[in-house]
Image (cartoon, rainbow over all chains, first blue to last red; front, side, top):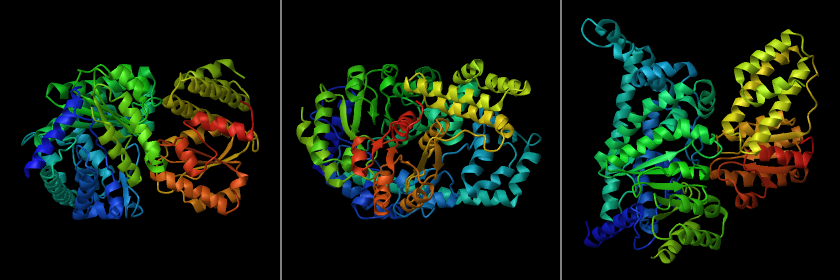
Length: 416
Length: 211
């Protein structure tokens, strides 16, 4: 690594860590989720960067070097998905060439991928449920796994071997296993490119924002298994099962994060929050269904030396007094539409705040609008440290000149 | 109007409400009266939502109860007996965006508030909005979108209505995750709403009808 790059790396790491630890850094750090912005900035289509790792690499590196955020986000795991999704015939996303035009971002397809009467199977053995019921539904090429016998029945030579292993000989199962192998090779390619990119960014002096990813158990249950509507109704019709399922998912969500932080050596864990926002449930429901397992997840991560970095999507202003209950100086809460001055007032001595220049300003506002919003954020949230500048959500369609104004203004005005 | 039914439903007691409706019908109650009571209950649900006593899951639950009651009662109604609608609203998620949870809640709330709603679904091209505006002759066009790419799709849809000479005949309202006044100006819509009740209130203001 070049010596000045090594120094810059150290400075940037310290700047962000100071903010997270609620100390005053040399200036307000700035980090963003670039999303598909780099593709548009380089004149590439979404399809190109989803299928061509070199194009994605170049596009991301270009914005990194031109905009100089304090930390970057490796783009491969969530952008270079085309070949992997094709190998599986994945149904939970629409992407260019698969339900989307070449220049539209991929989008999630909501559904009840687990029916209401399947809670018991899920609770008995989530892995068996996923392999035999869930995978065949979300991956067209894994449909053959439906034919398998319960996996937990394969115990020993006279218990399970004969009846439970036999279905592995079926041609549909063989096809599914072949698809898994192909997908495995694609996943390994994603990982290799990820490492290559992280290394390059490091050589240029840029650390990665986060080294792991997980979700609130309630979100995982709602996003991928029951669907938003299904889970909302479950809170009335089968509340105990919802709570049990969240508790079942908690150690899985914890393990997912911990394994990744150990592999990456980066303690910061990204946790996008989808379904706990204001309006999406009452305060009583938030306290009963959403917060307990998320709080335990974050506390557990902190105990292991990690920094939970949830992105509270939407407006979470009414949740502030509840989500304050977490060890101080360890977590970073990014907000999208939450009242930031209230967040500073309530959470200022507990967590680092991050946010929240609205995409409406970054797409349709003037440069002056953008600067005025950033000034207000630095004046209010930046006071005494504990703040990281960011856009409200992924930059995807933002105007480059507005993004530039956000970066330049923060670097100038944000000096302590 | 049956007070007990109104209260059971407004309090979202699903099982009790459905059981009580079955009992009423068995005892020979007028199905139109049952429907009137459910509409009254939905008004209370809407008011509680406005006062932030109820939230989206409560609206979804109320919708499920409504569906359950309709399944029991609708087959008993004579043809042409469903109530008169107040005015037509065309709604859809704009081109490139496939999100529908918000749009579906708005559609449901407009429907139970007595508007005649035509829902075009998701990823609706501007040309389809134009074509359907011509055919359906709505008073209000509602454009929904969750992603930032929806800003331009909304803008193009409004421009397409202008080009077709239809813009003066309709009010355009927009809504969705990222939508605010800044986006309303950019899109040149008449208004934006932050939730389903805001959408109902906009339509009432533009079309009229009981509050």
